[in-house]
Length: 355
Image (cartoon, rainbow, N blue to C red; front, top):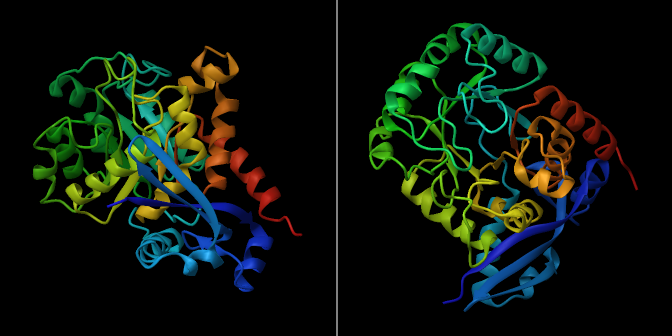
């Protein structure tokens, strides 16, 4: 049996979007009336080829019975408002996840915040700038990095994790780890979200141990492992392969409080990354909020020629703004202030447009 996929496309924004929804000409994206669409792309695989066609939402009723049922099921997920399952996070608004790497070797800011005082200051600055989530990590998963012991990883983050809720009660705490014991320790100290870049595949006991906790999770995609993931990554079709991966992962996690992250730069070359970014609206049909981290990533350097990761802020903001226009809800970034400024200006311009 053929497998079909549905991607919302041809978007409208702001007052124009609201007007078209009211007239029944477009549908809201993820419950957000400021972004709507009037066409869908229907994709399917046949052997090693991908076939697609774009139709208007008015033409869906003309499809054959099986395909019409499938597309309408997908549309329910695409248009539905997403449950706000994280503290003080509203998925109708762009949400910023600020990055705190407590590592000596992360690709962009390794070693900058290893000092407890510096780390706390950086958290405060990110929250003041508008971050609703802080993602704390003690192990680098940059391309070429190697595993570290649980003991070393926990020693790097434990003081920040234990103090976090005392100082930042209204901010969501995310912990970036692949190790089940660190997940459990973090949850016991108030963590709201577990962000495992392996998609809970690194530690076989992770999901079993987490069953006793009501904890939200990031379902992240990575091909291979950090030390080898950028050695000739290969897909039949990166977009549909990761969609299928998400479908299986959602069933495995068996939890409604999930964020989907396609893992830009994690086992992907430039072509893969650009395909995922430009077609990201496909993942709305899975029915969960989307989280994406493009911040300072290598693909920006490959496009712009800027090798210093700290000088990739412009590319970061540009990618975030495009992803926002596709309905992505959460953005994992280093430069919180600059990204929020870019989003604010973009929204003011775009969402106030009228025909």
